[in-house]
Image (tube, rainbow, N blue to C red):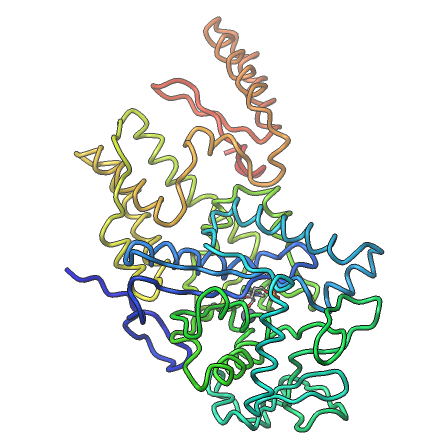
Length: 466
Ligand code: AMP
Ligand code: ZN
C-alpha cells in the first residue's frame, strides 16, 4: 500500500498530498534560532514538531536533507553583547552550543546541515548583487534594499494587502527607501559592530536574506518544505519568498510552507519581548525531557498550546501511567527494534496528528494490562514511543526522577532507607517502619509494596499523603 503524507500548506491554506520534486532528495529548511539568549519553551516547538516531520520523511524517502540554521548576526545579538560587555562571538558561541545541547536532550531530531549566517556572507553579497542586477533591489547610502513593488507576488503567503503589511511591520520610514515597504538586505556597520567588506562598504546582512542565501547554498533554488512558527509568516517568510523567487528568475522557492501555532502562557504568546518566557534550559533542570517533549506534541502543531503548571502535572500523571504499564511488562524480553504501529504512523501521515498518535499510545498502555500477548503489547508500546521520541527511559529510572527539584533525590540514599524499612518490618518493628515511611514521604518519595518487592517513586508533595 502506498503511504501518502498529507500536510497543511500555508500557501494554499489547505491540506495537500505531499509529493517531493525529487523523491531521491527531499529538502526541508526550518528557520533556526537567533542566538543571543537561551531559547524559551515556545522556541522549541518548531524544532520538536518539524524534527518529527524529518523523522517521518526519512521513513518514506531514501534521501532527506534537513537544514536548520543558526542566526548569528543580528542586532539583538549586538545589543546583548554590549549589555554584557563581552565580544559578540562569545554570545553566539555560548548560546548556539546551549541550543544544540538542549535540543539533544529534548530529542529534537538533528538536522543534516546547520548553516551559520556568518559562514554565508559571500553568498549573501552575491544574492544582493543578483537582485540589484535584475532590478529587484537597489543600493542607497550604504544599504541595499529590496524593491517590494518589483515583485507582484508579495503578500501571497500571509494574504495581507500592502497597506496592512506596512502597518503590521511598523516599517521604518527612512529617506533612502523608495517605498515604505522596502526592506533591508544589507546595512552599514559602525566600527564597533560586526561587519564585512562589500561593494556597498563595510556592513552586515539583514535577517531575511540570511535564510534565503543559506537555503539556496545547501538545498538548491527550489526546496520542498519550508517551516517555522506562524509569527514568522510575515514579514520574514514573505521576504524570503520575494528575495529567493526574484534571485532565481521567478522559480518557486518553497513548495510547501508549514507553520506551527504559538505556545502561550496564560493565553498570551510566550515571547522575549513580552517578558513572559520560561527558558527551556531551566525547565530541563526541573523536569524530565520527555515530559516537556510530550507536552509539545500533545496539541496539534497548528493549534495554540497553553503552558501551565496543571498541564505539567497532567503530563507527569499520563507518562507515569504509561511507564507503569511498561514496568509491569519488565519481565517480557523483546528481540530487535520494535516496529511503529500502523495507526501511529497513519496519524502522523495525516498532517502530523500527534494528539491522535498519543491517544493510540494511551490505548496501548491501557490494553497492555489485560493483554494475552504481552510480548506484542510491549513491542507496540515501545514502537509507538520510539516513533514519537517517548518511553525511551528505563521505567524504574523514570519513577526515580522527580518533577521539580530533581537533584534533591539521591537514589542510593532512598534505596538504603527502603531497605531499612523492610528490615524493620521483617523484625515486626512497625513503629520504626512507619517512621521511615514518613521520612521518605517528607522527601516526596512514595513507596508501594508489591509481590515483586518494594518500589518507590518521586511524587508531587500533595500526592505523598495519599
Ligand atoms: P526566533 O529565535 O525568535 O527567530 O524564534 C525561533 C523559532 O521559534 C521560530 O520558528 C519562531 O517562529 C518560533 N517561536 C517563537 N516564539 C514562539 C512561541 N511562543 N510558540 C511557538 N513558536 C515560537
Ligand atoms: Zn528564516
